[in-house]
Amino acid sequence: MRGSRILGTAFARPNLTALTSSLPSPSQVSRHTRSAASSLPRATQKHARTAQFSTSAGKTGSLSRRNDQESRKYSTKSTQGEAPPFAFAFDIDGVLLHVATPIPGAPEALKFLNENNIPFILLTNGGGKHETERVKDLSQKLGIELTTDNFVQSHTPFRQLVEGPNSLREKTILVTGANAEKCRLIAEAYGFRNVVTPADILKAHPEVFPFDPLLDTVYTATARPLPKPVFTPGSGMNLKDALKIDAMFVFNDPRDWAYDIQLITDLLLSQEGYVGTYSPKNGDAALPSCGWQQDGQPTLYFSNADLLWSTGFHLPRFGQGAFQAAVAGVWRRLTNGHELQRRVIGKPYSETYQFAERVLATHRHDVLKSRGHHEPGTLKSVYMVGDNPESDIAGANDYQSEAGTEWSSVLVRTGVWSPEHSGEKAIQGRFKPKVIVDDAREAVRWALKREGWTGPAL
Ligand code: G3P
Ligand code: MG
Image (cartoon, rainbow, N blue to C red):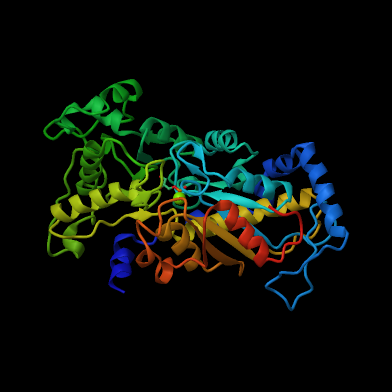
């Protein structure tokens, strides 16, 4: 399949083994979760009791698709009955929210799952705020209690790059995004020690960008002194004393495309990542890829590949994937058609699903344990509820769970995909969802029916 080959090379599968293999083990993960579960509002416990009452009265229908198995009596009161072997992963934009506005039915669906101890995580390609801040924000908007233990955003897996043998903790990285200063603070919170932003370089060397910078006030307000001076030819400066960037990260959708593309491309053309240099290998036909990106240039990471995303506007809007396509387009133009080598994570990439599955398994384990399910059992199925066939649906369809968990893709009609706008042609092959439903609430109802749930109705 030509597409994937290019994709294969262009989007060099993120060498995320470092990212996933050093994922925290269940015991390490969530000191929060235990507190989260026990901090469930009393009311919820009351509901749980009543819900239990109904089930123990034998109203156990068995719509279970697993007809051959004894229909499961799901209890919501702890220690009785089996823990639900299924869980949910919810996309955010276009499923739960349109930017800041809850999508009808979504808060109710999450509240229902919380009240019935059916574990779920939020798995978004969004980003730009630290997880703690974003979770607080989402809890307020959706009116339910969320913790960072059941929340994964596009750049969350980057935090693992400060661990392991190829740790970037002490290296110098460049970060950008909608608000590069905020991205710097997130990167520092993740453990990266030397974080530079485009503002730092522009304020130290305005000549790197000959136009009036769009975000000049922001740059002036947020620029920090550079850890090392930018190399200036003829200055007698020793290259080793100059500013070297070891990796570049796009945390979320940049705003100043012109300057960011200039700076990122400068570093891709540089000698070993030294700002202000140009690699003698560039364009050398005797070298692999004609010497492009063959001289220790910094790795370029994108946190997600979404070309489009769903906001309040009636037509989908450009996402980080559009910026990535612009960088790749300029690179192809500069290099006579060479593909930009970069690392891309986020949905649909399996590394992000593997990361999310581990977070979900740990969260589920702790929530159910804290509810008295001493044997939570294995997580048999996850329902990925999304609005974007290219990220949510393809990602869930492609993902081969290391735990043998079945991931089912559920497409809602409240976001990027709509029969009128993208239609049937956009949901063929790996983009084909297991089911299409109106919204998040219908998605939960469909899954509960499929699982033979006999507890309270949503
Ligand atoms: O920038 C966010 C966008 O790309 C999509 O976010 O929540 O739909 O994965 P989400
Ligand atoms: Mg979405």
